[in-house]
Length: 557
Image (cartoon, rainbow, N blue to C red; front, side, top):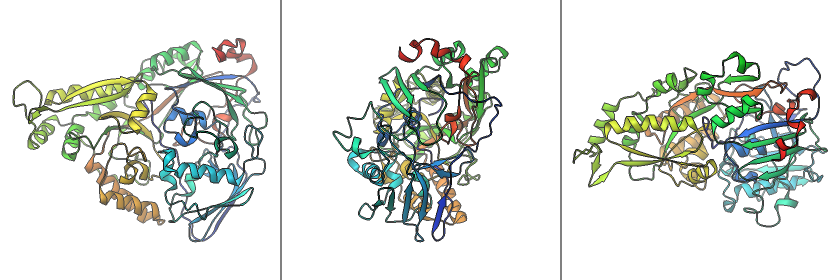
């Protein structure tokens, strides 16, 4: 994920503990400070980058960051989040939670419409939830968030009021409604899995004008959008897998926005001539890097060997030499800024000697003196799947490959395009891979590590399974007392660090470059530039600096 071509968890937001019935009614507005003093101007084309093509524009099948970046502009959520990470109204103008915490009643804004002009109805919410929890839909990102949904009691009270009922209460359930709504009159017809790969109809500020697979996705501002109308007329997402190609396009002004690598930031991102044309944004979000081990693979089923492999990853060297000091160690599935983080869990230090001893204790030795560990005539060799164009993932894989070679473990690196990579990883068709998550503010890791969520049912593509971990995950979902919940998740943190279904490596700062002609670019703590309201909807380009609109080729080639 983030250095990287990235499968991304759906970003959720902390919902406070609620006792008794709670009612929320408010008007969503920008919470971000504005640095510009001149008046925003409507119009213009913005060229943004996607690190890989989308697999599908069907929201229910969303698994990767590129898909979320596009669909967040096409589908408004039921509940949104602002720059201060507060849950705020969106499609739902207000909501109520029953005293037992099982029932959520949403009152839809009567102004809300889809891009085809049809109103957003309570029945559309129910339709979307039915598709998410239907196993045939294979909604690996969202299905776990709505586990326990009681469809027999989930009803449309009237066209704009929907009651959603669960069999069990969950402390972060409200935040799960930070999802889009799909119009039943469109998606209820035809083949749901295959007919909506290239099209998307939603209630958001933009609509999909065209998708050219492998090249670009063009969005057009809606004329009948009902919330804060964005300033930019058109957004073109260019699919540029290679970081160097994207960086050069940024410098030439052909690309307005992109995540950049730490190497690019270090080598050029601080130069005066670059800073004249680009704003470089650098901040910690809730992203972190990991190495995923397929725990089902016979060479990776022993947690001792997974830990020994992790000992050959020199994290401190990576922080200094790959991220130039702009990253920090992590030890488990939570970041140091999250309340669930366990500060007493030590990082796995670089120790190839100890790793070799662990392999020997498990019966792996170089019996024929060819330099490779073997047992029963089989060499210990692992295949690593990497997303093409992600220089950071490739570099870290090469670092691990060289360190493991010294102890006699062979890594075979192979690269595939980003869409193929995410498809294979999320279906469990890999042995080892490198990636990163955009982690949740409310740290429910059910979809990642609960045994019931093994791929393809959920996002547990490491195929981790431990009954004690399942129990902690379940307890954490249902505990409303903050202190008790913290204790549960810190125990879970320690357990996962011990079992190493992933090797958690480092948390780098997120680095973005935005052309200075783009105005009013703000970031939110923990989220960065995107996935909060109004976020990029407040960006604008002065009329005399709209270079992409001087030739239609920028948006149509």
